[in-house]
Length: 466
Figure (cartoon, rainbow, N blue to C red):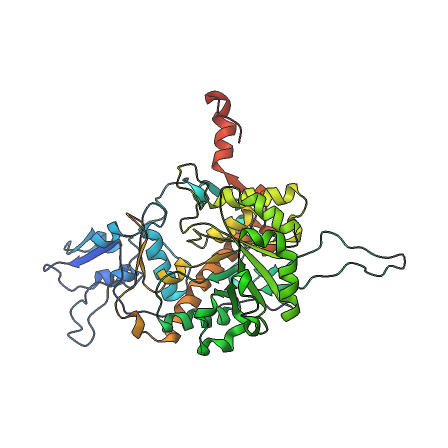
C-alpha cells in the first residue's frame, strides 16, 4: 500500500486588503472588559499589543465566522456589525461573494471552513448545487478520513487504458499496456488568464511541484526559473507547433494540444509524431460546445489518451449565448454517458475545467463522470484577486501583490489545496469510498434534484421524463 498523501498546510497571511462580509465596529461605550475575547473562538477580538494592553484592539474581521456571539455577550452592547459594501459588489450569479471569501480563508490556513452560524443557504440550485452526495457511511464510528485511522487514496491515473486483455494459446500477454501517469490528487492547475506577474507565475509552478500535480502552461510562460520543475509542467501548444517545440517535448511527461478540426482526422499521426520525439502522453483540449460529447467520443475512438473538456469560467457551454446552455454537471454527464454508450469509457481519461469553484465541486464533477478536474480562478482568488461577473468578467488583483514573495504565494496555493484535499477525504469517507477512481460516474451515490422532482411531481404536472 502506498504511503498516505498529506498536504502540509502552514498559516500564511497575505497582509493585503481583502473583502470581508461584515464590518465589526467597537463603540465608545466599550469598557474593555474582554468578554468578547473569551466568547470568540476565532480570535476576532484581542487586547491591544504594543499599546495599552488594558484596552481592546480593533476587531479582526478577516477571521470572523459571523456567529454573532460577541454581539450577544457584550454587556454594554458596544459591538455592531454591518454588511461591507465591497462584499455586495464582488462576484455574481455564479461566483458568489461568499465563495471568494471562503477561498481566501482556506488559502490563509489550509483548514476546512467552519461557519459559526451554520449553513443558511438554499438546498438546491443550478448546476452542482442541484446534486447531493450520499453520506450514509458518516454514521460509522471508524470513518475518519482526515485523521488517519483508515486509508483513503485520492490518486488518479492519467492515460489511455485497455478495456480488456488478450492472451495467446500459451497464456502470454498479447495486449500492449499503455503508459500512464499517477498524480496524488484529482486536480491539476489550468493556467489562469490575465496579466500575471513573474512572481505569481513562478509560485504557481512551484506549488504544482510541491503538491506533485501538474500545471498547464503555454511555452511563452515557461521561464528559465521554472524549468527545474519541468516534469510538473504540461505545455499547451498548437498541433502545427510540434516541430517548433521538440526540445520542450523531450523534457516533459505530458503535452496538451488545442483542438482544431484538422486534429480529429490526423490525431493518430500527431500522437505518433510526438511519441517519436518523446514517449509522453498527449492531452487534447476541447471546448465544451453544444455537441462536445460527440466530439469527445470521436477523439476517443481515434485513440486519444486524455481529453480535457473546457467550459467557460461559470461552468457553462461555450460557443453560444442562449438561456438553454448546459451547466458543468450536465456537460460532464453527457460526455460520460456517450462514452459508456459507445463502450469506450474506460479507455480514455477525461479532465474537466470551468466553473470548478469550491472543494465540493471536485467530487461532484467526478461523480458525474470526470476522472479529474482542472482549476484556474480559485488560484487567483487565493491570492486576493477580486472577481466581478457583471457587466463583464473582470479580475482585479490587490495592490502590492507583486511585492509578495514566491514562497508566500506558493504556500497559499498549497494551503488551498490542503483544505480541498481534506474535504475530498471527508466526502469519500462519508460515502464509504476508499479510492478516488471509484468516484467516477458513481451517480448511484448521489441525488439529483431534477430527477427526484420529476419522479415526485412529473405525472402531476405532466413534466417530461429526463
